[in-house]
Image (cartoon, rainbow, N blue to C red; front, side, top):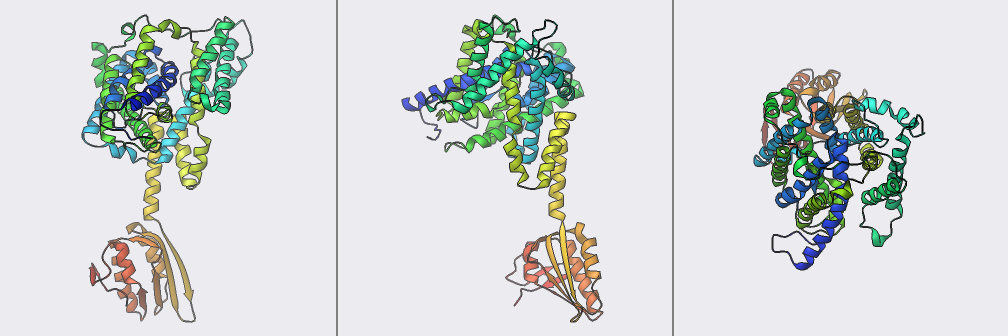
Length: 520
């Protein structure tokens, strides 16, 4: 893979980027419309976001090979916003989120968005996957999704029963088109020939599912695009802007900014691992995303993030510069302007089927196994985040996961294990300390020391001690004087203790309350 360069690209580079842009366009086209439908918005608003993500953000991005557009991870938030506050408020929230992202990039906060536990991020994505799967399963049957995630999940048995024809409904016909779409994607991903590997499964699924519906003249709901792109805009009104003082709207803007930024930078990190070109400038990427989301907000379109499916397709297709992302936005614009009549033949059940498959893939079982390798605590954080997102809402789920991850961190850096052995014959006590000795550990350490008999020789072993703070050092000093008054002694490898306190151990070092010298 050639590195992305600021120099004028060669014709060979342009050729590779041109071919990659076609592949990314074919992946993005059905997803832009499907995610919009999953968000409770018209398909045109998803396509507008894809166009802005390519033409604008692609030109400004700090991650040259990342592709931006509407993301499944934001669909749950947008749906909640549309249901509670109306579609017209989408642009206002997008403007708030974009402005916050732009400010975060200006103040160089990009790296901090990466400081989130992977268990929280993957738990969030899995929770979003469950919600998308459950809601879009109903749309795939030409049925309306329920009011929230738990109701969508509870109604899955009812949805399955609708696959069987009753009362002259068309639910089973829409389900057939959706099942054909999913089967096509799965079979293609499993058995596609290497020579045709660049043809994306979702595109083929849309083609086959649409052809199936047309061939059998299925009376099911079709995509509705406006005659012109301008007539499909959702520009916020003065009344909508007046709602900017609503605490709920401000909170949603903050949540949109946080989730979109975290997903974008997580995606950028993954893209960096796929190629050997220029690395991501996280602050520049945040600024680009902020500008893109402000433009989308001004147009009333869906919010955008960096999207891993499109970005991976871009890299795998041989892209070497940002030209491929920019050109894919041009192809989306051309498709909407020149061929809306073609897109209007696509059944909504077919697009919903793609989202059902996407939701299933977001619940990555392999990732769960990988997290389990790091211990039960990480797994608990993952499932707590997932359950919080599904059962309550996305923000609460993320906050719950973040709080548990923080609690685990505090526990890890404050946990001290003390193993005690007492040889009554020699009146010697050995204490092995493992972990971190901080002021949290003083009661535990005091109990272990005070259990030593008067006059005993107490040896403290610190080989497995990661850290000791001033409070514990002072306690050891005070206890040593007290124990010596009973005829006992304290033996400790002071040089190693000093090293864990963070001081030099190759010279005489003074610690408050102690005079410590290196071991001979």
